[in-house]
Image (cartoon, rainbow, N blue to C red; front, side, top):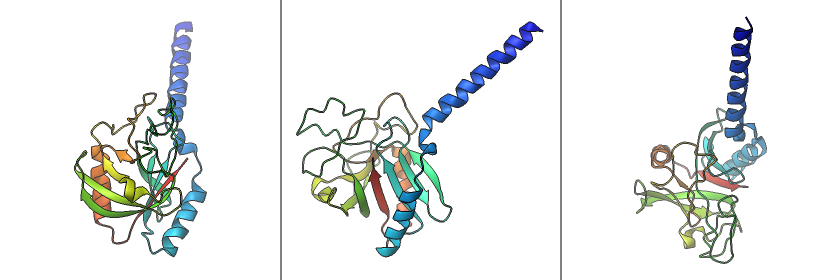
Length: 203
């Protein structure tokens, strides 16, 4: 009887830790993005952009965790989420914590990420990943150099299609790069969309 009780307690402890670890890994689920979703929908309607869904990238989340979210306005929920890179930001400063924390700059050749809203533009050829990229047009002072810097949405063989925490995703030169598999899904979705889609990077 004591042995059975011990086994039961051990099983309960393991299951509790499993749930706890799972919650930590998917901590983004606990974040309240409702104000971003509301603002994004209003912005899309005001600017004649796609009001069915948008992309929200939260760079405050560890790069080994899912932080690229597809939010469906109609279903009012996140319908897909994957990893995404951030910029190394290593040109104009000694950035020793570049893996742990995304840094931002609108300066040309800074290799930094850029916060703010983007309009996803034309589909084009990429030398990376599945050879597809989408031009990103910065809509705010924080990302107005996106086209000049060729900061685009593309895939990269080095980006995993599943969470790798506590490891980090590779660093880019500012592009939000995703896995080949996820880019294929994004590409199919974007090709079927008549109006420009909003991509919003926050931190």
